[in-house]
Image (tube, rainbow, N blue to C red; front, side, top):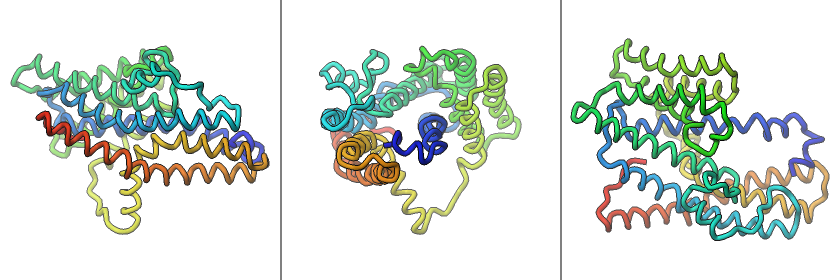
Length: 332
C-alpha cells in the first residue's frame, strides 16, 4: 500500500520507511532506564537470583511473542495467496519456530516471521547481560555492595558499544551492538536520583555524555544522537511527579498497557490488510492510503484484543505456575 501512496506523499512515505525507524532508540533507552529502576534503583552491585530474574523476563516476553509469531506465520501463508511481496515469508518450519520461541532466531540465522521480532530478542539479551553483570559485580565485592561499580561497568559497556560494536553491522544480532543506547538509559536513571549529591550527579552525567559525544564526533549516527537526547530528557523529567488523572491520562495509560500487544500483533494485521487491498481494492493512492489508515487502526484494536485474550491470560498463567513451583515473582 505504501508503494502506491508514495507518488502522492513521497516525503511522508520515505520518512516513515527510513528516518522514523530510528524511533527504536527511544525504546532501548527507556528500557535501560526501567531496568535500572527495577534491578538496581540506587546503582549498587549485587543481585541474589540472576537466573530467576532472567527467567521472569523470558516468561514475560516469550509466551505472547510466540503466540503472535504463530499468527504472523498464518497471516503470511494467507496473504501469499493474494499478493507477491517481500513482506510475505516462506512457510515456517519447526526449527524456525523453535528458534523464535527461544528468542535465538537472529543469532541462529533464521529469517524473522514478524516485523520487530529482532527487538524482542535483543531486549531479552540486554536484560540478561545486565542481570548477570549485577550478580558478578556483587560476587566480586561481597557484602560491600559498592555504589559506583555498576555505573562504572555500565559506562565502560556504553563506551565499548558506541566506539566499537555499534560501528560493525555484523554485531546487530547481539546485545553489545545496542548496549550504548540501553546503558545511556540506565545512567539516566541513576543520575536522576534526587538523593545524590551534585558532584555524584555530575560524574554520572559525564559517564553518559563523554562516550556518546566521542562516538558522535568520530562517526555521527542519528540513532545515537536520538538516544542521547532521550537519555537527557529522562534525566530531566524521568522522575517528575505528575497528576495522572483525567480522560487524557486514561487513554495514555490504556495505550501503555496494550503497547506490547500492539507491537506484537501489528505485523500480521498490516499484512492481511495489505493483501486484501492489493487483491480487492483499486491501486490508486487514495484507496491505498485508506488501507494504511485501516491497518493502523486495526492494529490498535487487535492489540487491545490480544492483550485481553492472550497476553494478560498468559501472564496470569505464568504467575500461577511460578507460585506453584515456589519462585518469587520479580518486578517487570
